[in-house]
Image (tube, rainbow, N blue to C red; front, side, top):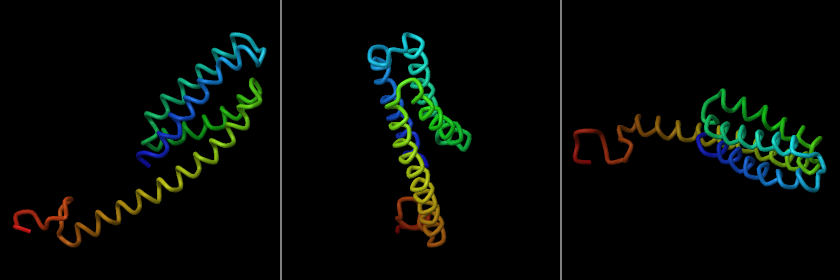
Length: 126
C-alpha cells in the first residue's frame, strides 16, 4: 500500500480544494464553508503523506467519512465522497494484494538464492 492510498487522498484533496469556490459562490454558505473545505483539503493532503503507515490509513479512512459529511455544506460533496470511498476501499484491497505479491516474490527470490536484481547469489558470476 505504498502508492495507491496516498494517490487517492492526494487526488481527493485536489477535488475538495476545487469545491471551495463553489461553496463560496453557489453554495451560499459564506466564508466559513470555504475555510472548512480548505482545511479539509489540507488535511487530506497531509494524510496522503502519512498513508503509507497503518495510522495514516486509519486517518485516511476517517477523512473519507468527513468528506461525505461535507455534503452538509455542499451536497455534491456527499456524492463525491461516496465515489472516493469506493476508490479508497479498492485502493486498500489492491494495495494489500500488491504488497503480498511483492513479499512473496522477495521470499521466492531469497529462497532461490537470487539477489534483488535476479543475477544470482552474492559473490557469484551469475
